[in-house]
Image (cartoon, rainbow, N blue to C red; front, side, top):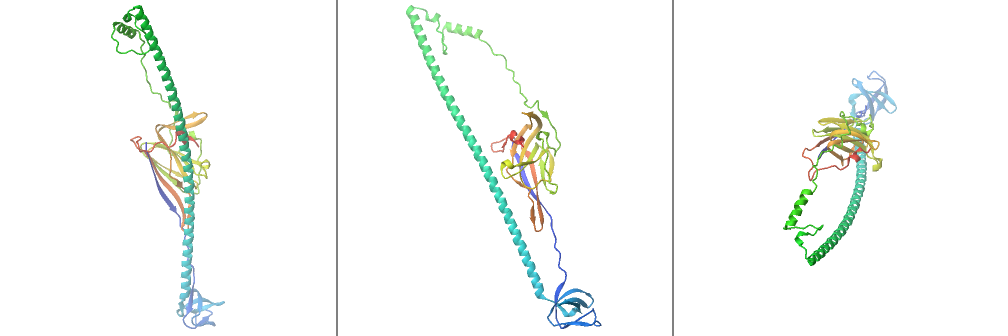
Length: 392
């Protein structure tokens, strides 16, 4: 059977905001008198030469503005102030520089992330290559052993055939000698047939015909054959689970990270039920960790949430009629009809990524089903056994 296996990446993004700076620097367009209050009736406490820069603290005094000039605070007439383009240009240049620094920072972070992803991909490819080489080696060793066994069997068969040929030749020689002796005594050859273990074809004598009839009447007959199909799962316990449950045969409790609002959304088609096992990848295959085991019924959509950060692959069992038993003291579960087992080649990356705008939280959609046409020459069949699927 062929499985339909698709992924869609979703990203959940949070954002942060910035605050604007208050206050502004202005420049006097004329010689200004700085007074102790917002009005001509207040005393003059200083004079500001034309073109001098002052810091305006507030312009909410009618025609007057509160300023800071050198180490003193006072009030000047607002219409004699003009914006200092040098400050605006400096602030604009500062913002542009900050934006460039942030862009460079993001580019560096992205490059680091891409390098890490490339490293992980290379490690996974190397691991798969080693596993494939080991598999090919085992197949070659098995093929060599089978060839040797076949050669030995052929040699034994040849020796047995030679022995049978020698025995037949010797038997024929003895029969000819016996016939010659009888002929020398004048005996009736047709009334005394020669017995031989070798077959005789085309005999037309009456004696041969009578012997054949007697043999036919006295030969044993075979009893009638009864054929019945054995159900090897008849003693297994049939189990029914709700979608989202963990089958008891795995004796496993899932691992969760409730700080992460991520998910794997799985939609199962009408032709199968599935059991999905999620494995968090370690540095080596021996370090891989089982995180979730989930049973999902046909025509059902199930969310697997709060998945710990990391990279994952899946083992998936397809089929109908889930049953469980105990084999050598260990619980074992399997589908008994239309069963198919596979390990996904796609890697699901649930690592969060921090950016200047917030945090990217990956989530995925997964669609699973079986085609109704069965296996075909180019289709995908089991790539793992049921025993491999049941391993933790």
